[in-house]
Length: 166
Image (cartoon, rainbow, N blue to C red):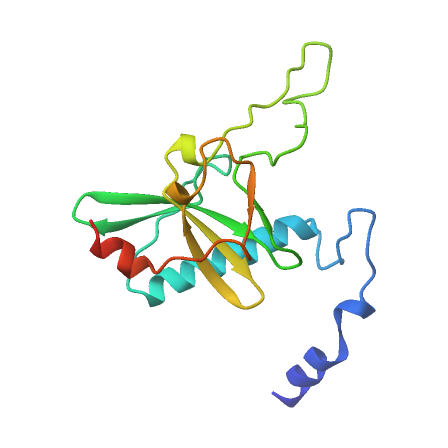
């Protein structure tokens, strides 16, 4: 056990080499920092929802418009989009952000990807993960054409209070 703890104490993120993608090398399955941030945020939200008594379900398709769903009443399901906001205050309300979008595939017959608003796609909640924890926002708070919001300008909601209004 002591040897295991010594190994854990020896390495820090600063000691690890960073490649051209901004990734520390951990194995042959290197992931970009943004992908790791997304995974950490999804895990934080799933744990938060489970602690609140929900059984969150995730889609199998990584390009699905929602990140998870929860049943809030019998046969009433809410779609949740999970966002990371560790180093800022702005949260996108559209699938591809508010700027230009990358093409679907390179080549002469390429076309831009569709940029869809979460409100227009039936997303009920935006779960935002910050350094302080998980906050939830009702998408009905935002204008259908609004591209982003600041977590400092909007108050997060209580899931239980929102559910009690059903």
